[in-house]
Length: 259
Image (cartoon, rainbow, N blue to C red; front, top):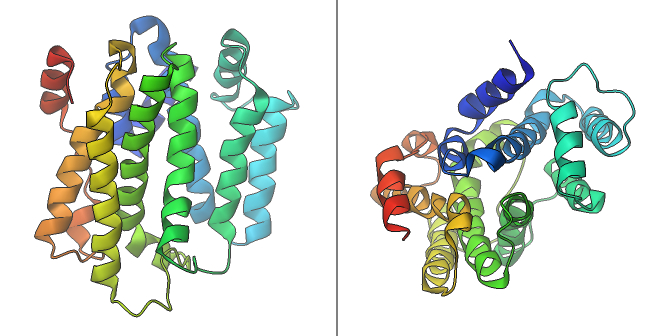
């Protein structure tokens, strides 16, 4: 399997929804966007593959050395394309490193103390990823950044809730445990924040078609919000884990250039 085919397959199976959204990127920028998203898949998998925190942190350092330091990693099909896109877009390596630093939180022992901390835990990574993606798409103006950040925040919050059962199986505690309200109430509060972020993204004026691959996931987020509502705000409902790529809805929205 070629390097490009491997990366495509990694994203298709590891993050079906971002894969579908990335297909709406211009052909000359699509491969870079897919490589960035594939890196996100690889980083997200470290926590479930590492038996001990130190092993996970070593793996994160391996990515740092291979992609940013140019030390080894030549056998991994993703390393070369990542080095190339960093050079091609003249990316500040610290922006990639921020993704790695944020992933270190996956190995934290303590749960977030309150919902504000849980929200920050859920959204910091997706917002940083969206910011990088806008640069790859040459769409990083102020309006696009604001709208894409809103969609990314919603996506992070909903993904956080959908992954809650999986996190618990791994021993991660990603919502407050001392809150007086129950789990469903916490889920509804975070879902309300996701809905508000989507509304703010849709209200943003001045966005350009170049940013559409970062904005179209708003429609996928809508589907997850509806599923959570149907589940009675129970984030442990197994139905919530199902991906909802919505290719036809995304195609229609892209044609209208509206989310």
